[in-house]
Length: 259
Image (cartoon, rainbow, N blue to C red):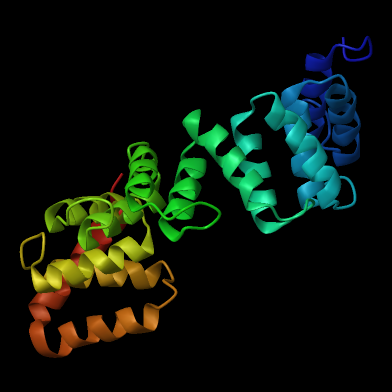
């Protein structure tokens, strides 16, 4: 069917060559079939071809070609393509930097429920980046993404509640959202949650629990892990007994071994 020009069959054959399913993995042949399908307007092939141009897989890396095919898919309503072309306009990759276009595509993707786009739109409203600063609007988009378990937005929502950005400050709600993000492994949320347990803000005061979250943040290579290590060392040297440190390490292992 691919040889007869069926775009879906062409795309599927390209995917088979890309993944090495049934046939031997061959990126050049994958590109060939994706291109045939994309030229007929098949949206999934257009997006996949654009991604290959972005990464330089099976062909020479070319951001302009990537943008061309990804925007074609975006124009057909492909939610990930809309977000991706929004990113490309935001950073000026393959297209001229254009915050208005970035916002337009982020919004199209976000309104279809794509959490990365919702989070990106939230950041732009929070920072007044390409739009008028609006913390309430930022909170709205972070919440939409956080409700879909998007860990960065869960952390961002914790920040909004903690500092009272776009919503009344609420340390209990802040701790709740930090914890949701932290439990999924987001290091910044783990660090902040550890601090809350240290000071008993929004959660019960618990140095052992703080020790656990600081340890996990360090293991996740937090950007400012050195500072987190200093906080953990203070706990070890001043506030925790040897048995409590042992308990903290046991909590770390229990967390890591959970299903």
